[in-house]
Amino acid sequence: MNEKSKKAKLSALAVALVFVVALVLYFIAAPIPAVSADPSTAGADAPAVNADPSTIYSINESGDTYGSGLDATSPELEPDLISAYATNGSIGYVYSEDLWRAQQPYQPKNPEEATKLMDDRFSSFSFVFIDSVQKQTGLKVSIDVDAANKALRTIIEAHGGEAPFDYLTVEEQNLLAQLIPLDDNTIEIAASAYAAACAANDKSIPVYESDGTTVIGEFIVQ
Image: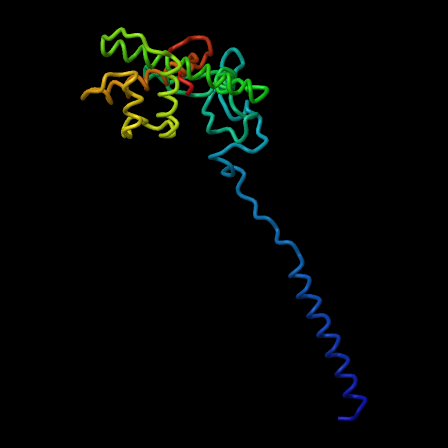
């Protein structure tokens, strides 16, 4: 093979290599096309992110949408009437606006207001607690409200608010003794009074049928 032929073959090989490299780089850099699902089955279990609520839920005669809040992918897509269980066991709907208002606690404007708000809530809590204790025991004794607030607050905060009377230290038992005579029923009475005080702070909103006007029960917002 002469020198001229060798150069011609090398040039052809170089061109071929450049073509192969360019082809490989093209396929590496090219985006992978998205695989589209069958429109008849896509999103069958969940609404589209920007779906119109009227296409997700049923609509009553008043024009309000109603259905499960679990179908909403954002607060804006929640139905006007959200399905809920009433305290009497009935299944109905609560207005999303009622639910939102009940779930929004008052926001204090400064630390002093926050402290006062907490003190006021604990005073109300203590009042219901003491009232429940006296009803259960039949004892009508005068209890210092400030002392009761301090005792209950110490016990509840020490236990993180979860079943605070299941186990009490000696110090906590002494605090509780300011409110309830210590005997075999003390813990049961305290737990019942605690539940009553917690329930008193709960808010209830009406539960409706899908028409949004017929009230069939109430829903507790804690």
